[in-house]
Amino acid sequence: MKRMTKIILMGLMVVLVSACSLLPSSLSNLLTSSTEVPAAQATPTQAPTLAARSINEIDSEILAVVQSTFQSIYTNVNPSVVNIQVTEYYGPQVLSGEGSGFVWDSEGHIVTNNHVVDGASEITVIFADGTTTSATLVGNDPESDLAVIKVDPGVTTLYPATLGDSHAVQVGDIVIAIGNPYGLSGTMTQGIVSALSRSLSVNDENNPFYTSTYTIPDIIQTDTAINPGNSGGVLVNMAGEVIGVTSAIQSSTDSNAGIGFVIPSHIVKRVVPVLIKDGSYNHPRLGISATTLTPAIAEKLGLDPSIKGVLVVDVLSNSPADKAGLVGSSQQRTISGKITTIAGDVITAIDGQALDTYEDLVSYMFNNTEVGQKVTLSILRDGKIIEVAVTL
Image (cartoon, rainbow, N blue to C red):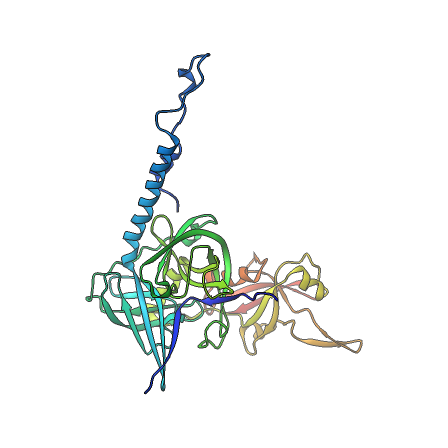
């Protein structure tokens, strides 16, 4: 029997029923320290000797620098990370949940995941110094799984986190997560960036409060330990800068399996200020369901397996794509007495930007377009490439 895996949004929920970057230069210097006598100092009959400092001594110094770096990051970042506790009331039933968040600014705004606070009747924030206070929801965006809550800025000293550049992140970068897994506040874990440019679907399978499916682009994948309660916490680089918000894992056991998903900081930078200002974020959309055109799918639809692009599966009625005349592959025709699924439109480019995968389309839409903007889609239809203008 196969072991099934699933994507899990990493808030921690309990149901109760009431009776009523890189290592510092000092480490690099140690790594390049010479352990041999220069050749000019050796005689023809004398082999080079080891330097006075042994390999063990150098190893100990490297370890001390690494430990000091991690300790410094924790000291500087942990005061920015908070524990978020939520309560939801449904008649006699009480839902209690926990997650994480981080201080955005000195005005008391705190960033977390939407799935941590969505539907909450009460929100409580616990700071690293133990200060506990209530919070109110300022704005939320299910489509990026981000939310902003607010506390009274006078309750304690606030330490806003420093955001880094997620565009500069590379596979192999050492990263650190700080959050509240299983309610264990101020927990720090360490790993590497294991993949980039993932996409994360947020839908009713992951959270019963969602009624639609959304796809978050440019997701950072990490092997850093992330568990229930980490949601809304931070993933930071070796400079202590937040490069993303820890949000979900893929696991067959509902706990860390070494595949965690993080919303990148460039999405956070774009969405959060709008949530603070307007309370919501309006995403541009085409109004289609789609998938990457793989060689196997292409062959099944009678297309050249070498074609790359985004296959339009379905077109939402009265959507921008519908008004522009896009065709989905869910339509069927009767050919020679047999009902056959037709090959829908294949989007090969948007505004001249080639698309190899569905993730490419989602990423371009988020990072380069706005509601009301007109885009040009290059579409393969009936063996020909046509240009179609769509107003988002």
